[in-house]
Image (cartoon, rainbow, N blue to C red; front, side, top):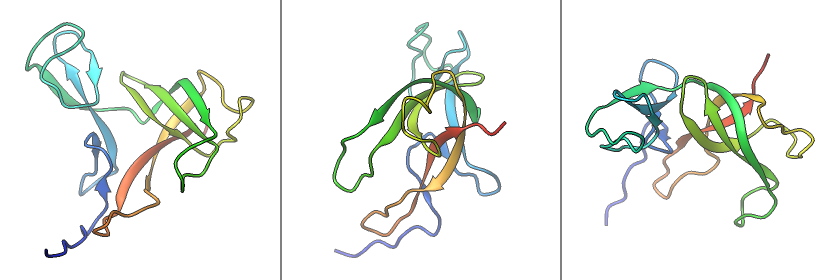
Length: 143
């Protein structure tokens, strides 16, 4: 079996992370043209109003507010703990799960409703073909 060559640039870690050739990475959602609901994953129908095949791709905001979080103290081997797993409501719509970085992983430091921003980084590991992946994280918003 022939070995596949690694991609020449980082690949997106999830399908809704877009990496344009001539710009900054961003998260893409789908907006229902009938009711305005926003989703991250591919779909044909809106689960809010039932409209079929009437969703438009939109660029999601890089800013939002912390909706809920959990401080993780046990994980798979090789994953550093503790870390903060978070769900964020983005400005303009969309709810995204990810990890909150650049903050002390304690209940005293992490507060519900705190302003956050997305940041993009190369994932710490490559796949077996040597591909690098671009991923996203949340961090406290710089004021």
